Amino acid sequence: IEEAYHLARAAKVWSSCAAFASILADIYWTNGDNERTRSWFHVAESHIRRSATWNRGFYYLGISVLLAIDDGRLDVATALVDEAVRRFTRVRDQRMGLDLLTYRVRIELASGLEPAERSVNQLLQQHLQVGFTPFPASFRSLANAFDSYRRPASQCGARVRARNPWSS
Image (cartoon, rainbow, N blue to C red; front, side, top):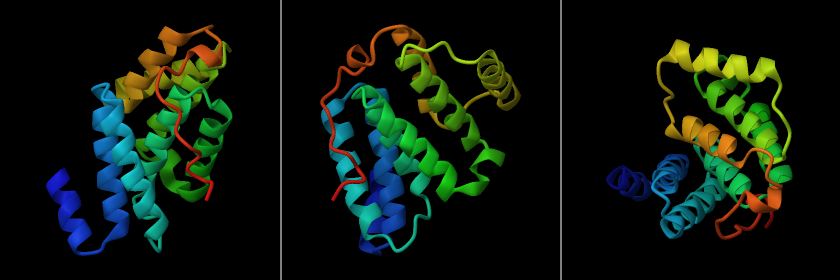
């Protein structure tokens, strides 16, 4: 993926750079490497700001949500999920909708709320229908969510706080 990132960067295809950097950040997040996660996230952030379009921006929003949840910034995480739905209107009809649902359930759990039975049933049904999640963040995020269930949001994020990706 790093090679693809460098090819996209050489070609100045900023939306692809943002996507590849976001995917790399997610990979490092999965492996618990906070330093590389944050480093690639900031690379993705710089490219998404340079991009003329938000094509492939869902990947960036996904890692942004995960980091906001980790940081205990649940209001930011919720706003980012809403932003993904607003920017990518077809996302609900695609497999990425599974990630959106997972993020919503994860946010509820991190807030100390019991998720709606309907949401959990829908999440489990979609996981079974798909047979896997195209982005490991979805299942991993849910597993972490259940681990943090009923803990105050201030105790959910053990990672270094990132600045708000929407601020200048």
